[in-house]
Length: 209
Image (cartoon, rainbow, N blue to C red):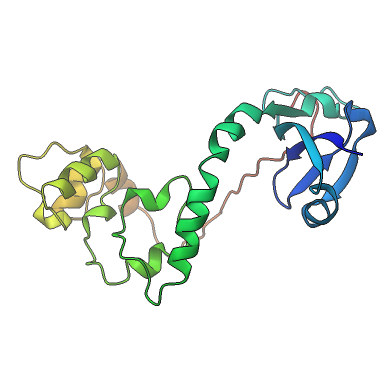
């Protein structure tokens, strides 16, 4: 007997919710359980992403989970990407069988869509003022690297930079005119008070979101 179900991906730890439609009859399974028990012979009706509704306004009392969470149907997007999977898996398998790491230059692609965990390893031999350490717009960095500029000190004089980028290029200490006099009035011992903020997924106070 074939079963029709929908899958929902939730933020880690990953939870897969699968069950015959409607959702009221859902069965909750971990990813490992789903892989072992559900996928064989399962017909998916949809593939969805469940995430927090940032526009939800808590009005005190019980939290309305149907309003707090949103379900985004990704069935069409997944179907389009599905044809790419076999080829990408083959490339990954081929790379893993190699005796040496792939020769890929560190660049912006190392941060898209997430930061690569090997970034520090691959950039450990880069100069202290490597061009990719220039703050601000990375479009400027892309243009400079295409010109063969490898360090911040090599940036041509006429290059259009932001105020912050210009200060970094000039490599001089800078203190704003208003802050300087204030710093001169500070005397030891100096005490610091650190403020921390947190964004809770579930509102803690009424009329909060």
